[in-house]
Image 1 (tube, rainbow, N blue to C red):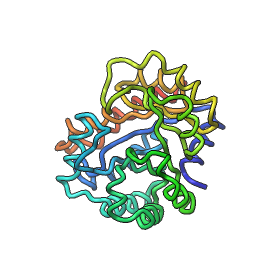
Image 2: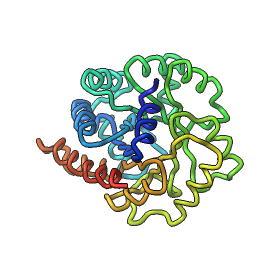
Image 3: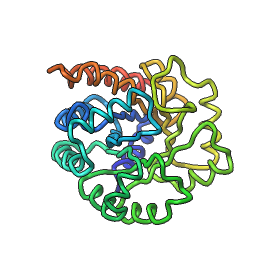
Length: 266
């Protein structure tokens, strides 16, 4: 069974919520990505999202844009990232999702990219700019390879389209809690619980909420309303601040553990 599916099933049995972490792959370099992944596995992270560096990350705010730029500058490419995931797999079975823009997949070729990702130990893809209406062949290839195709639902998604999206997804549904791009926020959206409930009517898949979660209090609040929370920019910002420090992994992992501990208290 797919690691993402197994993880959510285990968390459900334990009555726990999922703590999902996003970082930019190759920021500040791929060895740091490998070390962070292994440390996160020991710090209570349930699922790791790796942002594949791209030159035009339209869905991302400044913090993650700069992480993508640092990833490109460190020489990170999709093949090199897959090699890093192979290395992670020698020591960890943490579920891994690639957060990616479709152009990077198209350049390699859809069938080849999915097969290579599955072989390396990837568990799912979240393709930011590939709508379900254009995903028939993609979904079929993903299912054949045993990977989860994760779709996004936004606050502005009409309910009729939301229903279509969630019925086609697998692994989990990623609900974007705020309009706009990724980035840290000072508060959680006030309509979060009602929006999650609206999605829940149409799917039995776990619902993870992301975009804007910046501290343990927000992480706990979000996880209480959904099946899990996704924290990205706040962690990426920690990596940016400590990227040249020999204590990078220790410092970022300590921050990540504080968020994970908050999620697990629910």
